[in-house]
Image (cartoon, rainbow, N blue to C red; front, side):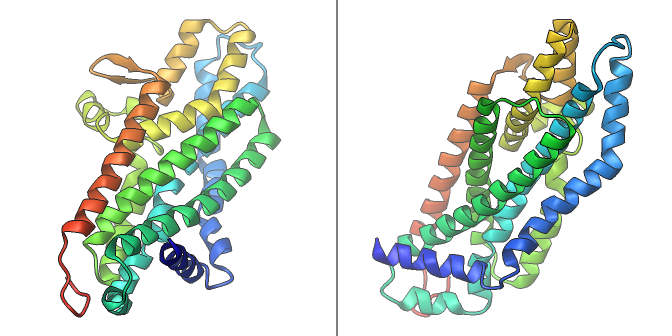
Length: 302
């Protein structure tokens, strides 16, 4: 246990060795928030306004609450995964610079070493993502706050689960990487594609039916839906309180991916948590098996 804790301390120190590392890590979600507010905010606002034009008495505050909830849900859903990959690149850097050789030939057990990479990456990811969530919640508080304490609690639970998922997924992928070039390639592909695959940039309800079916098999889709539900359900509930019919609210939920369907059946939030939780356990199990079955030579290399 002492060895495991020492390795964790070492990995976290290296991740935040640069004093600006933490601030730099927050730059991406902060920039995304500014870009989303600047370029997508009006698009979302116009969409809600036009779809609800039949209800002129609906307060503007609710529209702003809906826009804010959709914006921050998209940012947080993507950041939990991209930050996890960045935090976990230390595993690959140790291979690239040869540090792994020294660690492999030391008395440190392989299990302790591999799990220390996972634990350190997870802790670093949570620190950054919870801080980013604080920034996002501050923005929502300014534009239109309709979230309850329960919504905030479940939002942080969603972030925790997505961070566990992202760290486990990145651990498996990074296990097979060994150069800085491979790191850059994975980071580029991830940054460009994950937001679309999980429905953060565009709701999957806007895709064609075939693609929707494919994306319904991806766990990240359910993580995005969970975050979107907990950032927007307060505003959606207030809409009903102001006289918007239930069927209209449900159609809005469908269009935003708050409601997700698998083979025509509605997936409730409990089932989404179950899917994400089981996926995390399976991925961690695969990562452990990979480290157990992989053979290393005396120099610490594969």
